Image 1: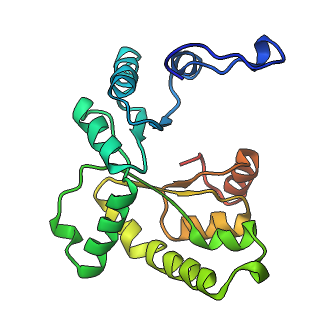
Image 2 (image 1 turned 90 degrees about the vertical axis):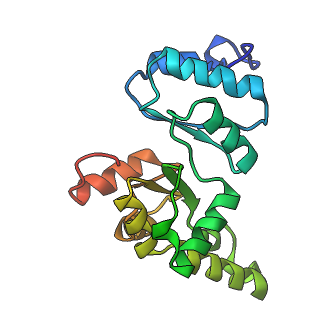
Image 3 (image 1 turned 180 degrees about the vertical axis):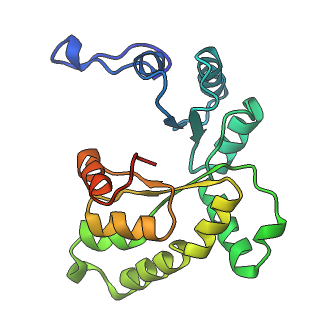
Length: 201
């Protein structure tokens, strides 16, 4: 999104937008940036664009890789970072040992999947016993209201993905999630309107 323009067959209307195009088109919209490649130049260029457009308060960046998140934070600690996968595991360890309240956290966003949705994406009858157990265990460990409440009290936002039906929307908000990520934003908006939620979190 930052470097050269890219065109797909089919015409101008299918051009992949540059990051600056997104910032120009949506100046007041929060943007989540996943740095897919461990590249120092890419990280620096993204940071420069965020600063140029005065979006440090509207942008979160990072990756599942802890190495990339560390580089992002080092490049510009004013842009909030999300928990990498290793840090999510560490977070759970601190939570279940009772040490979490005593440990400082640099991350400001927790973005995690709801493991139970795998049974909706894949035929449950085709899951092996071990797959069902792992799904249940991951869901039990991750989807904890006390964890989300603790993080929220510390100013850390919690987002759960990728949820596409009302039961999962309801469960996420009941658990205390700040918001959800979905493939069907209109469906989510209708759900929130119906339940008296004034705006998307």
